[in-house]
Amino acid sequence: MNQYYNTDFRGTIGEKQLLLESEVTLFDERTVWVAGGTVSTYFNNAFFSVWNGGMKDDFLTLANKYKGYELWIVGHSLGGAMASLAASYIENKKLYDGNLIKLVTFGQPRIGDKAFAKAHDAQIPYSFRVVHAHDIVPQSPLKGFRNYWHHKSEVWYNNNMTTADYVECDADESEKCSDQVPILELTFYDHHRYYNVYISEWGAAGCTGNPANPPTTGSK
Image 1 (cartoon, rainbow, N blue to C red):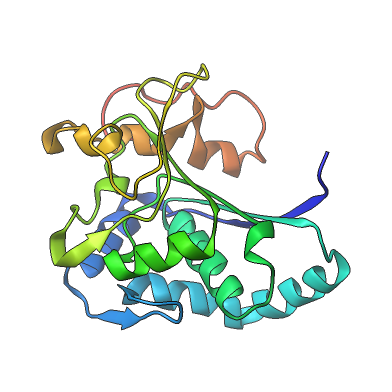
Image 2: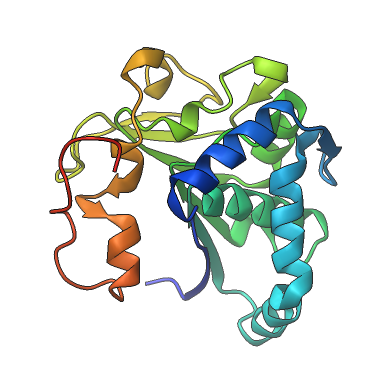
């Protein structure tokens, strides 16, 4: 088994923050990204507030201690966007070997434009965006709106994620994965549930118990 350590980014807290993210991502200015292209200023600022707020020092300490280990970077929702930027930034600044970086996000929104997506593809060979069925967040902002575009690769579970039944799409965007879901069928319900776990309550409970039982209808 390969040796590794991981960096995890927490997701959005509540639907009010989720709606705020969607609004500012749609209409705010974008920021030129260090590795190429432009990204949402909201996500850019969110990442750097954490990076400059203590994460950088902690990361450099761990990177020096665990040289040669795989670095797994993961996150859900907003945390997925921040994880994606973290992987790109760390590789761009040569703080870690891009071939040792393993990026896996869940319910990640679109972060930047096509130039950013292509640059990201070249930086991080092991990069997967896991999407649960009709999750609305990975389709925000809409594909192509203000040139927003996903980077590769998508792993789409068009089910309740209790079995290993999924489709892998290695293109940045593919109608064979979640891009095929009609807009009116997208839901917050699937965004809150991954691998049969209601993520927010599961995390608050210390990642224990069986939190797949909160309401099975409605947006929660």
